[in-house]
Image 1 (cartoon, rainbow, N blue to C red):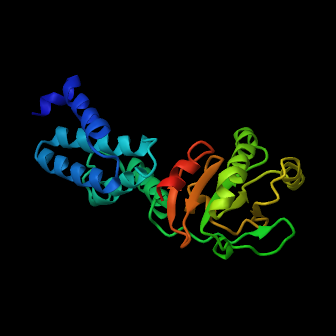
Image 2 (tube, rainbow, N blue to C red):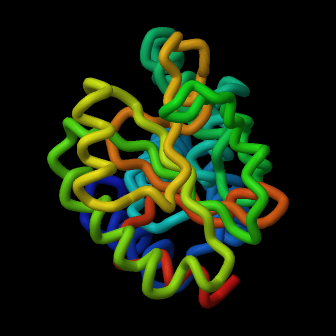
Amino acid sequence: DARLIHTPIYDGKLDEYFNRLLPPTPDTINAEADKLLAKARGRKELFKYTLHWVTQWAQNSKIMGLDEVFVYMVENYHMKGDAYWMDNELLAKYIDRAQKVAPNVIGNLAPEIKMQTVDGKPMPMSAVNAKYTLVIFWSPECGHCQTEMPKIDSVYRAVLKDKGVKIYAVRTEGEQKLWTDFIAKHKLQDWIHVWDPEHKSTYKSQYDVYATPAIYFLDEKKIIRGKKLDHTNITVLLDIL
């Protein structure tokens, strides 16, 4: 009954179902969203409300990996004409956002990054020979980075290094001296530090790096196994791989 969208009832049911009853895995969420939207088809406003709710819920979720649901919704509904209420400008923004997230969803092969080291030597990400690679996009001018990098290094020295993890740290911006001074001050020499002085890399769009730090966890084959990480949850992810 489409009248439900004008009451708190339907929203509450959606919240309970997606946040409390379903396991937070993309395949499950996608399948259940498809079933729900199939039932809502034919009821114009109910379908609109449901598609919008699921898409926004997935886009704003803090649960690792559920950005894949957002991509699925956009590719399978919005891009196929189901978001009839959106004008071309708004639809283009959704599609653009999905296209930026799609390359770096969990389970994908990590896009190659071609960078160079502090001393100017080529060091693409694919050249890192490790059981696991922690890819960190950071800036020495970022206040959050200044706090987080030493904490990550503590976890690295205490746990990650002995488990075969190497850190591939990409400087996104900031003065070179500030960068090298930070590395020296916090004794981060065990990390692989790289940058793109000629701005040839497309890593920002490939890895959706619009805020720092942005952290990805890759396995031996450079498959993305984790993202949106910090020093508090890296070891938890490693324990379940």
